[in-house]
Image 1 (tube, rainbow, N blue to C red):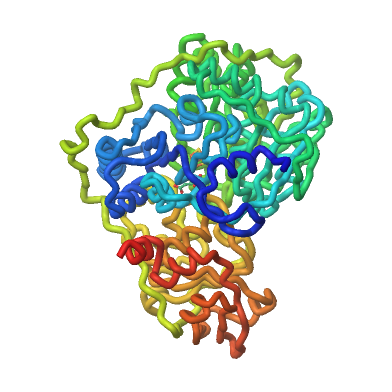
Image 2 (tube, helix red, strand yellow):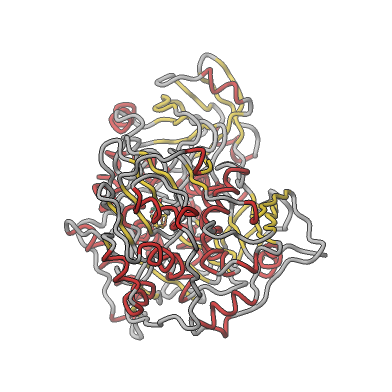
Length: 640
Ligand code: MIC
Ligand code: SF4
């Protein structure tokens, strides 16, 4: 049978189920990654499983999100993660070594392997031909323990890239064009594969920019073929031995097809406040810009930074603009320092930040009130920058650098001839900031500072449940809406009780208090509920507040899996018009919840003076988890 690239990797890793669309499949996972904002929870859950040493080929714990350390909290988290890593066979990438996805691509990623990471942008690894998924922390913990990772068998989408990018048009513009065509919901339940003659014209970092933002399509993952370009990249990283070629069969079948003509593509931007709100720069006009931020796991490679340095060389940024640059990794940073490009960047007036997520997750550099910020990042959700009324535009590094010089949104094609940037034949290899696991794990003591609090566990489902609707939301609620991040809150990722005071704070500040008054309840959501990040806190905190079910028009994949893992029932309206019948603080009950979940029947809902049906579209394994009050309870029960 002819297969797509993804199908070949799935088949080689299939340990459970059949590869039939929509049916749940279990996959063997070769590699895992965590970052610190989700890592503490993932490792607390891993510890609860009682596994001694990780069973994967490689597991890496990165510190890249919370690096401000304005109190003991972040430092405690780092210490905890570092000690767990040492004890359980996990590599530990220290703060300053770089952003997880960039470092993983450079130092660990390998074509044909499976990777899951407790971060939604883990599909960055697709740029090197990995089948890489974003997942909740518990799923990563299970994979570290040697368990399978479960997903519904996705549909296959092919995006054919024809032609070749024209000068000053970038990989970022390709993915923005795909987002324009497919929208932030268009990738849900699908794997996006890139093909066509344009593929070989793109370097690995450019491919990774594209697969990274597949997360914004809602896609299960995205992947490029593994070819001579992949091989050259791996060889330049001193890792040529992990190269394997990968391509789809000539007559592989795809469920959907898109085409992007690279010859005709122009520089684009995603306007506030959604990554699919894409327009050409000419259409947007010369908007006055206050801030430009270059970096993030989307655009912080050596290649990106060298382009920026060449644009800034010998020039000065506009007096009204603050330009920040965060190189993606210590490798990138060091190479810029060694070859003098850093000096071009600094003398132009840029502010150099640490090799970390930084402004992308609101850790500093919040724009001024109503400020306009051009960012090479992947998300421009309202308020994510830390300034509620800021306007964030997502652009390529070329567009950000050009605009930093002029002070207005500027088409980089006005800069004249494009500087030629070559990929290096050898990257600078220095893994000194990656700490290896201990050879004497029994001697390592796990360090738990006062910020590390236990995580909540769900309860077994009752037959009948009745309570109040504690929130009713619109469509496209992101996990940033559910639980904001940023410098004030990220330090509390390992402290659910404290974090719970901020649940939905920017949507409905009374939500936490209402949950306390009502003893929890049900959230009613619109379409694509829970899009965005993989943070399982967006399930664990509502669980802590007593939320029993979320009844929505539809869910984003990772969030839905996180809800099930925590024991919150994800329900969808069988008839979406019933959404209008229910209201905030209305009574809602599920008279036959347990038996209907157990039998796979539709769920009876009594609300808004009506009786109607909802679907609980989950696998048998997930039914078991819901009945038990979450995956950990279920695993314990099954082990008895
Ligand atoms: C993000 O970009 O929102 C994050 C922070 O990287 C998240 C993970 C998190 O919330 O910790 C993600 O994308 O999964
Ligand atoms: Fe970090 Fe931003 Fe990438 Fe999330 S999207 S991993 S916060 S750089």
